[in-house]
Image 1: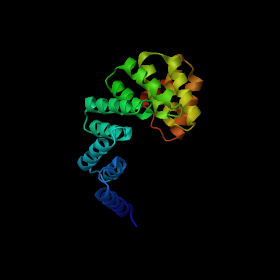
Image 2: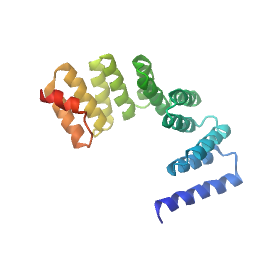
Image 3: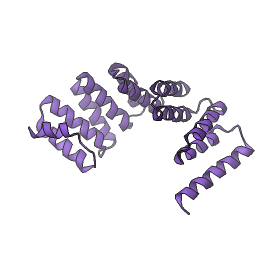
Image 4: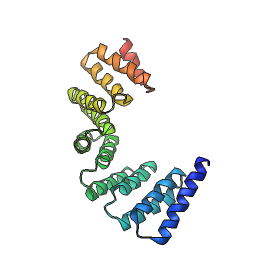
Length: 204
């Protein structure tokens, strides 16, 4: 059975389940995720809204709605939905990570750092949170904090290319070219496309 048929069958299953139990937030959510897989964003959005109507504490649904806003370039909407996600479930790392990401996009490093620190406190294996936190620290010129955040990411996931790339930038800032070269090489081995400006700085 092809992947498309699998998704269609899964969607049909969720719809049948909802016909029998329309108040199940999790089923609405699962339907939304499947519809996203088919790039049916408007239908997915309706499913996620139904999910939170039925289950207001379903933090993942708020995050998905935030993701759909981000797709449309609506940073305010993305921020709002993720704030609602962490209100629905305090300690929800992904929500805090997304809040930090939006602040980063706006160049608001302090607000980003505050949210991203929360995302990693609640989940010390949240590698994306640590990597984005490192970028926020680099924006502020806090190089040692950036290095610490990257090392925490690599503790959780040693082959996380973004963290190797960010570490290289931080070590370059500190003038430690050997460490910078080692981490850039590792990032490239892991398939990361390093910015030409970084490669040029390492060659100088």
